[in-house]
Length: 137
Image (cartoon, rainbow, N blue to C red; front, side, top):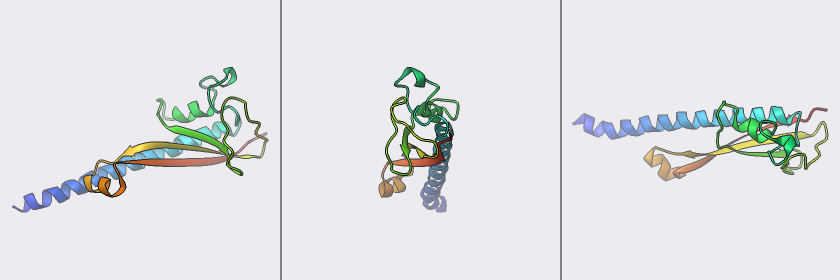
């Protein structure tokens, strides 16, 4: 009898812990991807995506960020100048002077498994991470 009353609550707690672990794992992956992209952007800030021959994979920030863990992840990657928020896109379209801070942001959807939590916050959340680096000369 007591098990029948406690089991739904226990299942809810277990699913909540699993969701927290999954969210923490994704947030860590996003932070690492942003960090790797920013480290590349520190030296090659105008090589953002593979729209030109000079920026073909793997020589661009987006590829470096998405492949940080060794496998291509479907993260959204955005690169912008940190001081004014102007996006940097394409391959060598934007000139970025040395000393300019560049922000690399990553984001990905997260599906919530726990029923009551999903009712409160929504079934899908977007987790984000960003890192800033100063462009080197």
